[in-house]
Image 1: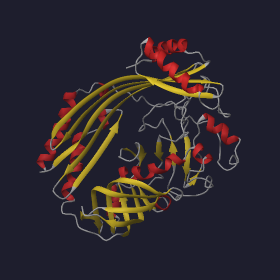
Image 2: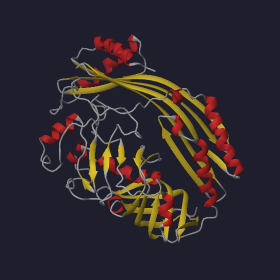
Image 3: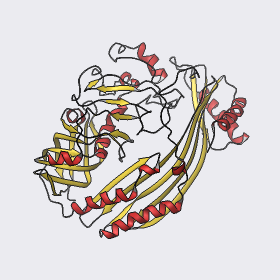
Length: 459
């Protein structure tokens, strides 16, 4: 793994090759391995080791970036020259800011994201984990497919204004699909610490979902009470957080335009962005090296704040919206420059209001409803009302009289996130969850009334 001191040494060399005053380098170092299995057997094992330097130059209100994974003098020199050549043909940006400074303040200190045990995972250990998953599939007369991956990553942001920040992290991930003739089950987990990822437990749950949903029956489309497991909640709500950035407001592409400070969701919805939360991951700084701050996004249903990169905060203070967006401050959520997206919160944590219920308790308190394991193929229909369409998958069940009765054919849904988060009857304990349509978050299971299903599938 690339160390901070090594990155700083390389930066000094890059700086010598540059003819401009301001230069920034984002270093990344990755050691990634993946074991893939299908039809109850491992069919692929891959490993990738790579280091890269993404070099941004800035002068006369212009900026550009070029990337190389060659750290010899020739490779670094060519990347610097490329960045400078691209910048020269850009139009000056009147809102351009100098690069971030080292005195930009500190964020909240978080727990270590690096685990020696995760870093030491071998192909043999991943194969052993897959073997246990396959054994559970065979025991249940099922066929399984999925992945088991492990990784070490390091990233650093260093610039000519004296800023130098560094973060190291590990990751372990298991995703399992269990297949029967007429049904399927799914589970997924990801954590910096492999001890928080239990392939056997995940396989057992996925197998049970596949068994219990065999020979699914058809239920007419309509509005139903639903119990969404955390992965399903994550993949839905993930579609709204790209709108919680200042540039989205300035561009008038956010569903929060003219809604900041209003009560948009139910009283039981409180959301923060908190990189220091013990269930979270990622670097404690953004794409410019600015330390991330904890931000209260939603408080008891009221939209309180949005996040800002440095340049967006400066633009917002001069805009016509400055008195309508709450507190304007640099929060350390910017993406590497140049970019068109600005910023977004990426360490989402739902703060549950107490009296949490387990999924089993939600089921027991439901006279008639639908239990949903996960969703997929989600697309946005109406950006301002945040209406989404998509399908259920890998474990959809009828709940009657407080019990899971049988599997159901999958549904297509059309559902407003605003209406959904106003209709949460009960909420679970927030957990680290993984899905397929959004980044990992700390979210709870939710029981929601009036969820709108529009069609029934044939599977």
